[in-house]
Length: 428
Image (cartoon, rainbow, N blue to C red; front, side):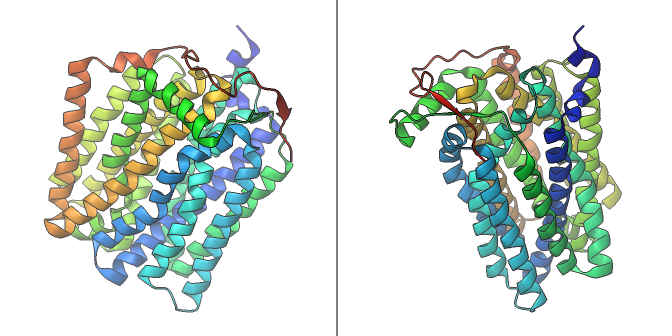
């Protein structure tokens, strides 16, 4: 048994650069969840409309839908660290700007949407670079461990951030939650400055972004496991992750609680994901990806149905907890499929298609749920959500597609213009 095997998934944390980045990211993402609890509750209280929640979600995430694919090419052709430094700085400035407007009592729903739009543009360039940057901080043999721990980091933030948001908003106000989020970006920026990733940048060799993007898209399309991963990322985001963006309306209209009690729902979601991540690290590779995804889909269907069936807030907490369990298992399965089977020179572009599915699904799902909630009732909207999950499970079982997720290697079946060109080391 190798040394890596003996150390298990936590062994990746013994590498300084990864440990520093992982810690800074966990704190910063916790701050992001604080703002995600505070600002939607503020927006809902200002407008009384769940549609506004959907509009805000679309503004912050839809720009990424149009930018992510090109960003995936940039992640293969540029320093991923440089991309992250720029995008983290933009997002930090957005948070400080939002805090300034709140402090001046000049905050308006349209202003929240505009600032979210600017941050969403940064997200569009950032997400693929982030996902493909993390494995560069550890030796290649520990790549999958780093990917799993990256999911755990997001999970820790999701578990801790909303609870802190509830406490901060209650004691110090919404502005304090926004300010804390803004300050935490400095930790990630600092970690990026001192890191020394092992990335090699592949020269463009005269190929245009469109040509490279086309070849990356062809690579994903010709591989059924990758097509399925992108599809599942879209649907689980559309019907699963979108629920966190309309949580203020669910707290109010289904459970009869203040909109700020969305903090409790999101804490439950985060705790579910945290428990799921601990189980994921403990189980390791003993579960097939297909099994993880099927379990996740069943849990997603059960959690959404439970929300629609009850008016009890405590039962709603259990439902969101189950949703957290589901999300993490699905994310680990799909993420490790791409990170562990795709050739390195195609990983950034492939990841961008996967991220595109996520970033397209969340705002569309949030808007659909919010609009249905205003037209009919929020309970009806969540019933529809659960029905989609049940239909997806029936489709996957009937077609037998999930077994494709258990592939161990995806060969480079395209003639990639970047594959045989000289490489240069990652510049600061």
